[in-house]
Length: 177
Image (cartoon, rainbow, N blue to C red; front, side, top):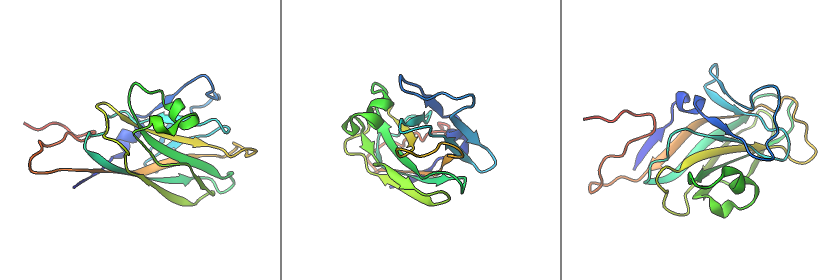
């Protein structure tokens, strides 16, 4: 088993997935926080704000884990979820309609402000080539979005290795000759 820790620069290259129900504001809803090494995914309502990490998930991934934290004490509780999603599947369908479209799904976890939570999941089927980790945050019904700075960091990926397998290319790692 190989443990891969994603460096902050991978998080900082994440992009927001925009779809028909995306709530847009005058500021970015998905943005890096270089001071803390975290990715901020700001929820606006019970419609998920979704970020897609740029690098494909290694095909022998056996688990994924990340730390979640709401950065402001005055914020409402925030719900966090992550999934491995095939490139051909729109992430909003996973987080809003059918979690079975994901290759792995953490479930939604509600965290209070300043509460650190670790989401971990095991893919329920083999990871398809090019699949990506998608992150989502949302507000429970009736919650205020003011100061709802949801953040992600501490990503770890468990990759199955064996002597019969060729070495795997890890996201963000250069191929060696």
